[in-house]
Length: 299
Image 1 (cartoon, rainbow, N blue to C red):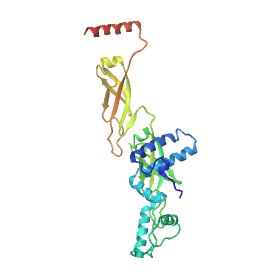
Image 2 (tube, rainbow, N blue to C red):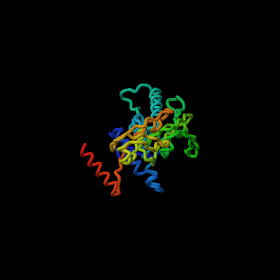
Image 3 (cartoon, one colour):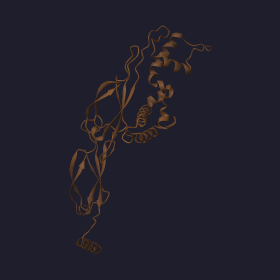
């Protein structure tokens, strides 16, 4: 199995914080995204490596195993069990003994662990869990507004996947038992799917909340009245208060994005008013504005 330095993939050092990892992932994912690099095999390969690196390093437990075992991090538990079995078989080590494991033993063990039966101290075959697999799935934001099913093909095997509403960009989910096959009677590994969500709507998403800007003509802002605005699931009528100021924000409760795995729960929609000053005024309109200015000065 070829070693991939996940820190190098994300242009980070080993002391990087979780925040650093998240920022690096987002920056590189945008740079190498398939939509920005169509038909570019190198960019596609790089994009997959970035997703794989993020999946491992963003999970503290997986990161700890990776830091200790490198490319063999997915088999850390099996190695520890096998090592304990061997130590138990040999008994306590004397101060002059050199039967402990070295760094080279780690590599030798994992290089040979899938070839033939492994016996330690006569305690029989050791079962090894299959490797975890990583995959990336690109969806549009409207695809994840509602729960739906999708069929994926992983290693020539079709997997029927239920995608819950509310999946976020960069989120990784685990499909148990759909990874690589176990060895010597061991269980299958798991499949980890990282999601890239493309947002081509006028709504900015932040968690479960949505944000958008609505243009408001000067007359409606001054006098107030009813308007119709777009929400993610259709149009909504709003009442504008008289003398509404530019930049005013209003909240539409429950008109945001679905909460992940919480059926019927939604975030909120926040609307910011952008007041449009009229242009190309007629002579009559200009005269009326002058009259209004004169009246304002007199009050």
